[in-house]
Image (tube, rainbow, N blue to C red):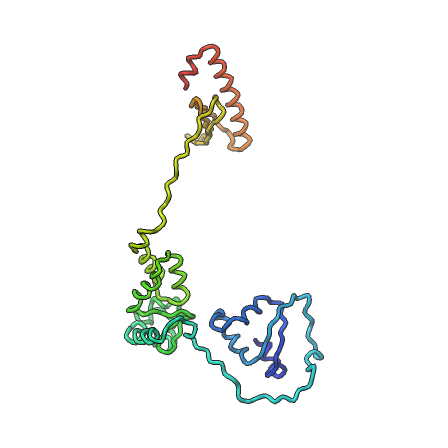
Length: 302
């Protein structure tokens, strides 16, 4: 912005091609003014007097400007027209609202004491401390840098601030298609605002009888029946637990329900794997011996 003002006499009244290595600038300046971020709207308003076409080029392809590069490529006898064309920017032009509803909002704002007090504060300037505000305006203190007044309406950035008497109607309109909480919030976030709008939308959707009747039910988790193993120690279950400050490894055989508990000095994957191998070899040897010499012992363990 300051660079354009510095070379005002060279580019004013002429189509100017700007090459920049800042790629987001090309897209920001191509947007409508009301869709640009607030911190960039002042810059874009200042540049309205110039006919600029911004093009992105990597920094390695940009040339350094010198005194000779500022001379015109061709002479022209055009005279600048003193009467400039002024672009009128309406803050409410982007709102999807009918003229009848627009007038209804104006009347509701005029009848709402909170909106009138807020409008007075906005037009006269915000005080230095929150305590100096009227009590019904305290909830708007955090948004003081974004609130503006125009044509009897109050706006937070590009969102219309809804007076108290019309909030229930707006919540009903937002949820008239019975969308979920996230969709309703997203719909309201584009055009409307008042303190506590999100909580009111959540309360409306959660208490909607139609939504509760047709909402997607939480499916039950089906029981997964495992096939029993055909031999001992072909399938086991393991877990770690701690007792009196000591860690143990618990192993259970799915076939015989045999339980093995091993004390662990160090909780590492290598130590656990070695302990499982030791338990498996020792238990299988013990069960084979018990089956050979005393079959009743195996039955007792089962």
